[in-house]
Length: 143
Image 1 (cartoon, rainbow, N blue to C red):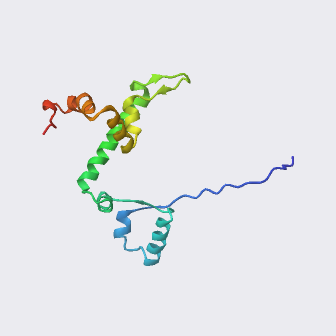
Image 2 (tube, rainbow, N blue to C red):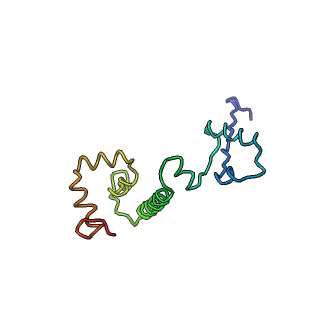
Image 3 (cartoon, one colour):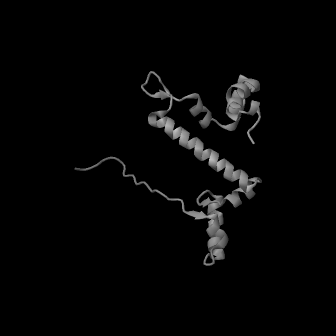
């Protein structure tokens, strides 16, 4: 049988990945390879997996803060996964899919969206209804 349609080919390019530790410490990583990888990184064609120390330095925060945020992100992902595995409290909507819970929507919101929501709800209401009950100690952060 003869095909009359255009022939297409798909080229899938994988983006190479280097760890920041490799870049910093490799002894068999020539200047030419480093320059080439630097150019690829600028073009978005090289994935560099940073260390906590490097990411803290680039973003101007402490490594302890980065580690704390990594733990918070992991905990949020675990809660979101638990919610999506049927242990959450999503409500069914017309198309048969569960509507995300408020917690799921807050987890997926950007910092700006969460701030806007807090401004609409009111800071006092957010504190009194959402935060103070969790920190205990008469609304003061547990030490």
